Image 1 (tube, helix red, strand yellow):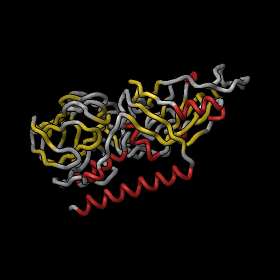
Image 2 (spheres, one colour; image 1 turned 90 degrees about the vertical axis):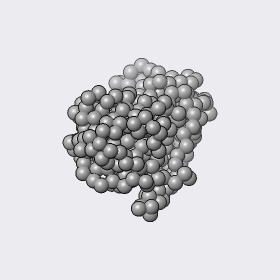
Image 3 (cartoon, helix red, strand yellow; image 1 turned 180 degrees about the vertical axis):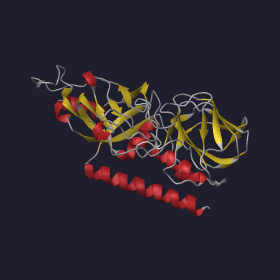
Image 4 (cartoon, helix red, strand yellow; image 1 turned 90 degrees about the horizontal axis):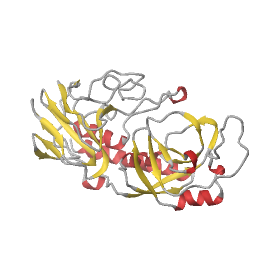
Length: 324
């Protein structure tokens, strides 16, 4: 069983839950930008949560199946078409040999996830099947998908007709709030600069991919100082440090960048805050033009949000497993 890529879409790639543990040596975790949507797609078709799926930003690919299987599409709101006829989203459905899956125009969100029963069977590299295209490894031949690629699929029976309850489906908005923990270098901002960061509305620019999401807005004010050796001359520069995934850096004091799952692991830009882990999936579903506010929370509140997020994921899993 295999899937042929008829049209690749924009930067479609194979992703799973990523390869944690190597960021300290410069290899990012990668994995699905919206882990919740990827895991849900897998559960719908009867896979374990960590099986490889296709992630497709902004434009869906066109796929042809050479055998019968079960498919589910989650994530961004985008019409699903099976042989040109409407098919459900957030629900698993069967496909037959020769069937073609394609998509209409993006309506909300930014990234869809396509799961097939058995998962996309590409080699495991450093414990993961995720593509790290900048590094040229993982996924399918270490790159984004191209027209004519034929991707093998693992053996599994699949489970058609499984659906995510309406109340557990995410809604994607063009106006969002992202919770952040200030630091590690917010002290480099003046009080006016911190106020500006947290009270302003920021607009996501077209520079928004798996590495980072860049925002436009006002110019932040930085504390003047004599820069230490190795920090460069710009007040927003620091001596090189490690970057957390989700951290916000502001090169030159303008256009904050949220680092995401393919981010570089370190450099010389001050990190003024970090988007909490529970909100990173929401970042992944932001498209250019999304108006965003950064809302400060404490570390305890961030940990509670993560616990709440995991509890909701558990409820979803119970709902899907209970429907078997």
